[in-house]
Image (cartoon, rainbow, N blue to C red):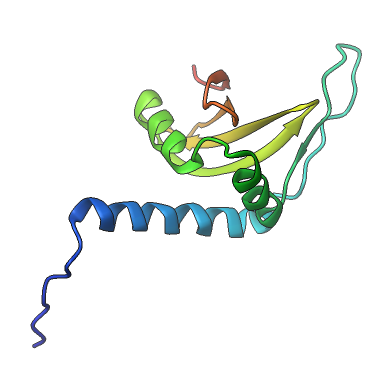
Length: 128
């Protein structure tokens, strides 16, 4: 049996490190989970949206000092009483938005869209 010594860091620091590790892991596997999507132009004139790869997303987040995606994922998971399953950074016209995917207990996937610049809620789909 091994005796584990306590680390000289606080529980909050450990949780912050674990959270950042989860964000980087999600961003690294995002291209494998979902191929870059583009919305086609229809009669209702939807705006084309292009999602970035994990490497591009990390670069843009650092470059533009966007809101932290992991914190937004946790906040939206709490708000919609669901489990966060992924997030990606997409460009829509001149704005960057986070698309956050949440899994509800009934099996529905909620898509939440938030402004990356300030973390402002834009809209959510499939919530009912």
